[in-house]
Image 1 (cartoon, helix red, strand yellow):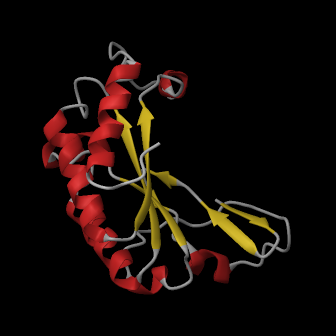
Image 2 (image 1 turned 120 degrees about the horizontal axis):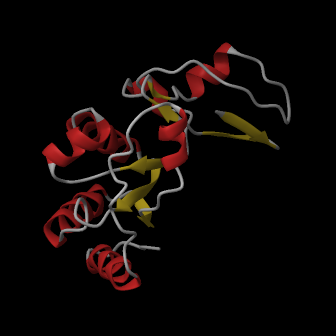
Length: 174
């Protein structure tokens, strides 16, 4: 969903229909200064989407392809390809990594994401996001089962370990 502040527009969003399609959506609708609203959704992997963007918040849920597929319902490869394309264009990227105990917290998994992010050369920040259950009520409201009900939130030590793995690759992890 785009939000305008001054000259800049921030676009976020992802659903089962796919991610927000970025600048193309903004060109299709005139929101006017300071206004925001929903946009159509489509896959942003076409190269022309990246030219008008100067910062991308890129979620990499897991380095393990099976876990990624299970968590997102989509293959990992298009995300990696899009990340490489952004690197080729020299676009600034912040990687977002959700730390889920028993699912994405394995050191090998974290190290895989960290190594890949460092190899790009355009990742200026990594947000290690501790898993939480704030969205559980949405599943209940939709009549769906929240699969991570019994999953604990990560400890401070687990979060610090993950951040240290990213930092060891030369990345600014917060």
